Length: 67
Image (cartoon, rainbow, N blue to C red; front, side, top):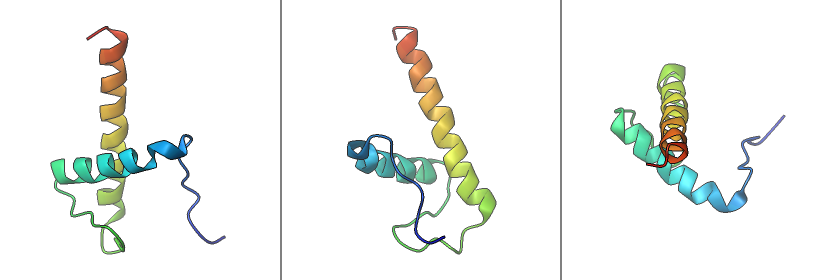
């Protein structure tokens, strides 16, 4: 199996998701860079994805609460 299987459900959102990923990585101190990131640990990479989900859930909850 070659290539990435990560595809945005809404292709137009890919750029925004990429910017969000780098923003989150910067906030939590993970040195994510454009291109090769094989020097990062699984824990570092996982923390970026986990924090992204947490922030998206918080934003959705605020929107649902009308804030």
